[in-house]
Length: 83
Image (cartoon, rainbow, N blue to C red):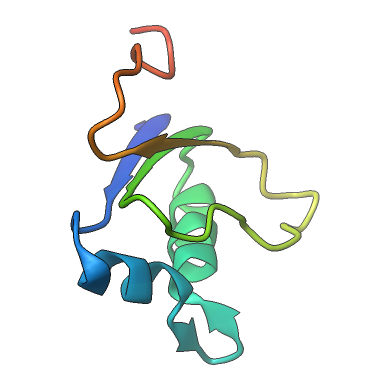
């Protein structure tokens, strides 16, 4: 089973818009995180463009997922240890 995931939004204004776009009452980011958590992902790295919203709404307790944000262009180590 896949336990780690990666979401990548484009590095320009369209990426900023996509992160906060609303779909059926939730942001696209929330929808994607929930979908991946339900699929079994426990650790999720999200790459966003500078200036994008970096917040996920309240997730149900049964969805155990750790979300870490990385920004395009920023030097960052791997957010999770390799398995």
